[in-house]
Length: 154
Image 1 (cartoon, rainbow, N blue to C red):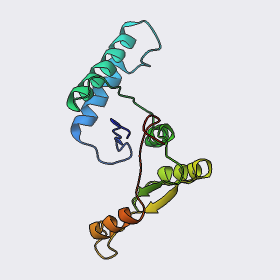
Image 2: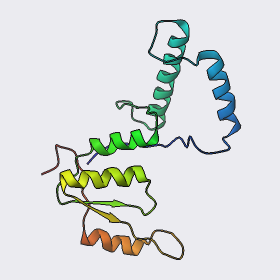
Image 3: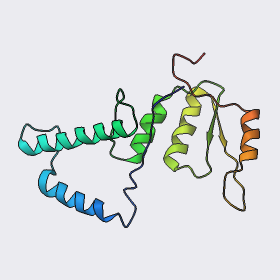
């Protein structure tokens, strides 16, 4: 089983954003809006410190001090890193929602050509657009899903 993967989309394209976001970004760009890790100057050190502090706060928030936090440029890049890092066993089933982003479905369909697993869509009530938990239970009985790392896959 893969442990400790948390995926957050920062909703970069949402509008409007909370006022705190505007205030923070304005201050950030005025005080340390430089490339972190690209220099030995004062502003670069300040940006590096902010990144380190943010990582530490996230690790503390999720009680996972021995893990790593990775920031990516886009949600697509993040989900690609995660999906490419998972060993999906041959002939297993990957369940997805009918609401998946194109970045998820495209990569999964590409990976089926290499690994030969199947993709099933989770059942949703057509009227309410809510998950049909009874039907999903039946889906899982028919085709079990397996998610594992190299140590536990057979």
